[in-house]
Length: 55
Image (cartoon, rainbow, N blue to C red; front, side):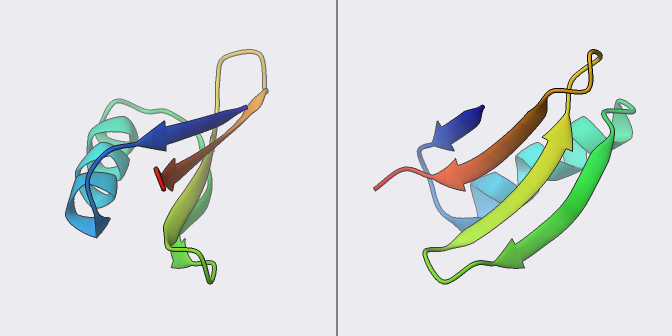
């Protein structure tokens, strides 16, 4: 699953910090993937969620 967010790197960092503080499993910390900052998390069932900036 992909979650495209409005806003730039600051918004993505804020979401990462919020999810991380609530115990959401983080599979990959924020990194620049060429198209922008992204991170990878998992839901309770283990489904992967990639958070990316909206184009």
